[in-house]
Length: 187
Length: 187
DNA sequence: GTCTATACGCGGATAGAC
DNA sequence: GTCTATCCGCGTATAGAC
Image (cartoon, rainbow over all chains, first blue to last red; front, side, top):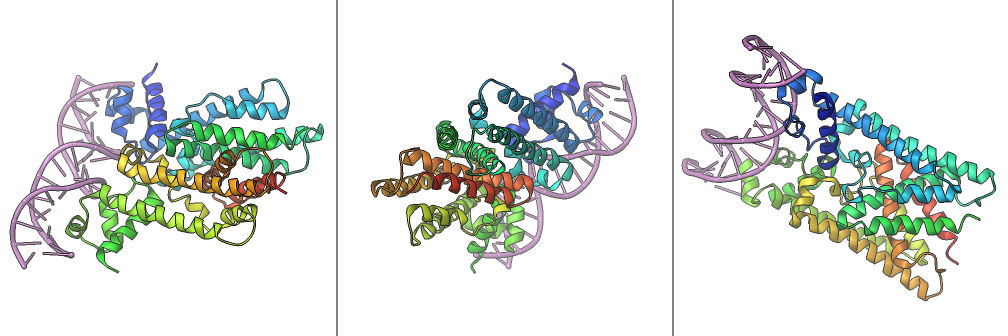
């Protein structure tokens, strides 16, 4: 892999593990096996590198979501597949976790992909549920966009509870519980 | 207020705004209007100060939760009151947000109050729902502990979505949506 | 493209005077 | 209790050689 690639991948890993404030250029270089000059040759500095890393992570997340939703079955089954998707629960959401980073959120360029990805996810689920509704698969409580918000919030909060408890159990419990609740609204 | 108090309150504010990694002793001192020597006289260092701050924030959160749940009405109404409680949504949860802090979570002493508070909250809601269930107010989907996990996860995730969107709307939408969903399970 | 040298302030303290 | 001095490595680069 190219040095540039190594730098981006190392930054992705560190942003996930330590956040933006907790990630130093030095740590990125060490993890990538690249020198200082090398890093500053490929990127203007920490913000530029973080932007490349975040964008790639965001793109990857969209792909993974689409993959889960592309499976067979009803909208309800697709949502279940999405929530049950394999993930590193204890590491938290690689995008959602960034919302806690003050310096990142203060930089509009870095903040945009975070906002866009989470907004896109809600819209994507809203569209899915709206379709199901048109096919008469769902009752009226609550509306599609609201249901999507509950789903994404439960997932994001599930990560938080799992990290707090150092166990994946609360994540699974919350998402399974939500599915059970939603199941009573579908036919 | 005493210098010691100022230091704790400043640390609380900074932990909330910037997290543990993003908060320096220097920033604490400046905010508290205290000198270096003063800070190190009252506390052995950043971890000790953070511990005092986190414990106080955790205590305050328990009090506020109890206050919301102590209101009149059914379990369902109490949960609604809890979710609708006045809060600084865009600043995130002062306890839940700390789960993203790698250095804090790596220190067992600092991590404990975070874990304990979120676990306590789930247990507290579980007890409330169990009671309602005994009074025949709720049906069987899902069980009390699971319902509690969904509620807390939705709240924590609501904070994440709100911060991402820089708007309180997704928080309100998710919590209101969950309440609507839960309402179909109660009688 | 990558390396080494240099810079300067901050992070997180310790020491000792007042 | 609080202040000032001092410490040492890290964070985040820039400059210029190879």
